[in-house]
Length: 344
Image (cartoon, rainbow, N blue to C red):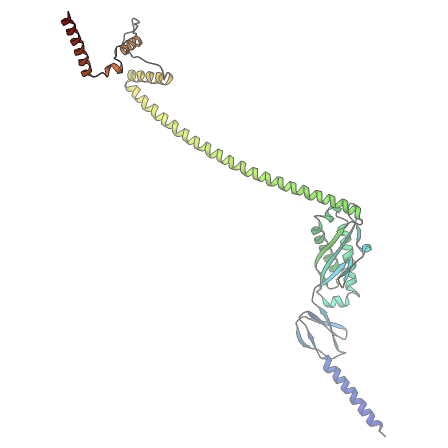
């Protein structure tokens, strides 16, 4: 029969081995590159470990470790995606715009745990707080936005405003979460008829923008062409100005030279100017210069004399008859006369 002392000894050794095993196991821990750890001493937070690798601490229950991920999480508001299937929650995404229209809006929030102790102990469910705060921020921004902006070109501004407001609220709640990004997934109308009407409006707006862009492009083209034509006209005008200026300077130089000659020989220069002027004014006129005292008017039929002189001039055919042929003709006449006299 085993004695009680031996039983107690074996039991004590077993407990001692268990205690030593727990101590040996709980005095070290590892932190991955994607994790961060919180060290607590009797439940009180001591420090946060972010360096990856092997670390040591006091054995449990003196110190304990809580590990949290450093990765970026995604919060899906208004829908849920599991195994490739998307489930919508219209009751959560239905909200009123600033111009009192109803839209369905859902988004994705990218967030990280930046203060592990606050995330662990400042709130019972930080992710639930983040979800409710996202809903409040989105409804606040949509409630101050017109429906046209929410459905078309104002989505980027809505995302930025929701991110700013959500970041402010999460800092106020102080649960150790920071917002990285906000992305609107869908902003749509609650029924097909209204959706079709707004689609037509959007298409018309896009068409108008396209026409406006084409008109601006044509305007810019015509403006550039007009600028080029203007520069060409200005350049041509400057060239004409320079040419006329040089021509005027040349005329002035000729006039000054003529003036100096006129001052030296007034009579000759005056007659020359009169003759040159008559030649320019009457280019086809026949001008005769006569030396007369001017007391009596004399008629000189120069044209008639020229005609008579032309008549006296032998014709080209007669002048071209050779002298030898003329002599032969005279000899023939003399011979004919002699023969006639003999016959008598």
